[in-house]
Picture 1 (cartoon, rainbow, N blue to C red):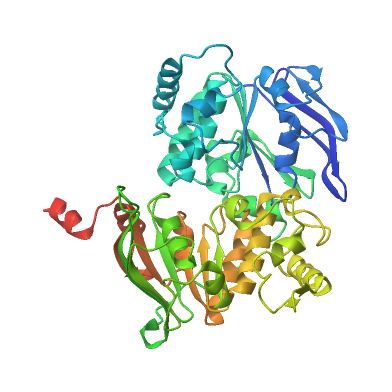
Picture 2 (cartoon, rainbow, N blue to C red):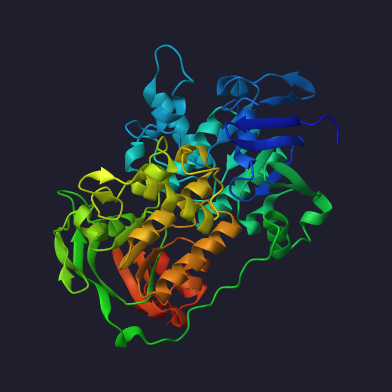
Length: 513
């Protein structure tokens, strides 16, 4: 290999009490896909944010095409052809797709219609189903992720850093992205791919760099990548084998108490298409009820309706034989309902607050830590330290801000709080999005442990493997309607795939004839 496109030499980065990168060195060649692999908090995103100019290294050097460069901000990185698609979106919800993409990249009088046409052509060229004139706030999470990718493509970057780019994409969308990466590097461009999905790593990478505890602890060269298996990669990444989970069995839950009953629930905003149509299901004590479906088909609205964040147009929700349809979120929390929202950054935590404060967020009116309006901070801090230990959260102490943790460790904080609060029912909406294998395994074990304690679990996931490995019964949601409810053993990947695409059994049999 000639002069690498990027060379990072002895990069060290400290944040107050945390050593995020410890003497990290790596190269990225032209026309190469380098996968950066490691647990949450291993330092992957930090080293790439240093390259992109979002963070400044405590020490170390950056070389671009063999020349030393000092990158102090993203604008300088972009001028060198480096673009980054971050795990957390940097979009303005009140602006259109086109406005977000051209923001900061156009001067003078702008021909908006011409720019919109240019953006739409770019989206169509890469087979991204993104409406250029739509407001970002109206887009699904998956489509917003595509807008982030289009922003980088619009800038004609030659080095693309992708931090968990497929975390919110469907399998079909992920395949489209993989094809884009192959085409992109074939033109001599380079990609750094941060992901926890082993299959993608093996499928698209030329080389794999493994990080652990802020250091590079191993490298898999091009000739080894094709032959390595997922279990070996996982071991290299987390340093131990994953615990095996007990798969759902044939237990008959019909004899158990129904804790959650949803009857004919619909949500239809005025003069708009229904978000949910005539949804009915029940969840028994100690049962995991899984909702499968492509992102944006009403899953989030269903979770918010159950939690009280959305008003029902019609229908009824019962919890432990009490009608809670008109109760506030506060009242539902008091009745033991926990909710791990799909977008932790937006709905699950306050980044500038400490871990203790985040643990207290929903409990400020409960008697656990409050007496006569006075907060027992000593008890809050002690319980937070226990959660840090129990959930193996990589944080020095309870005082550190939630925003300074890696995405996966932030999710562990949210899961710890909601599991603690959900005495009767816990809603898990995409609970393992963006997590590494070790953290995913831990969250799965947590869900099964809570199930064993008799809690009712609603699990929403776009990952079919997650749905199959945890759910006792599975419902498929398509355009706000339930396509069917099945026992885990009654479904195959092919059958569930058709249901997710809106093809029901009657249509399927009709086509077969």
